[in-house]
Image (cartoon, rainbow, N blue to C red):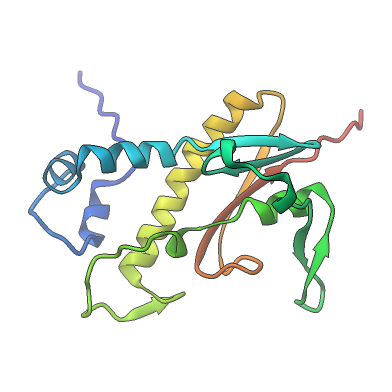
Length: 181
């Protein structure tokens, strides 16, 4: 009896790609179009640096470049009247400081002039790919956070136009631990 355990990313997502080299799986696609440096840089993106400051947890592209003068423990939260206001609560600070705007992050996009804009400036296919990318980052970052902070629990959110960021965004914050019995 054979059991099949498929990977986390559906091979059908290849149909969303602009570039079509006839590959039905990721290995051929990557082997033809992605350099080793590009592949390793993506692995680095899936394993970011984290810092802990006064009980707050943040991701950074490079923790060695952390500058406390530029990193204030202020966040934003949407008020009842849909206005963004400053907040010092740990949840709001982490949720704001940990935002990663997926479609603003990429400066290189496949040329697809025949794909109309669907949402947040993206075609339907690119929008779905941004969400797929955010979901995969969430999987890897959850694992990395659990290794770095085994006593903490984190919540993740993927949303469009999150607080003051545009497009498909990802963020996380520590879940509050209640001491109720």
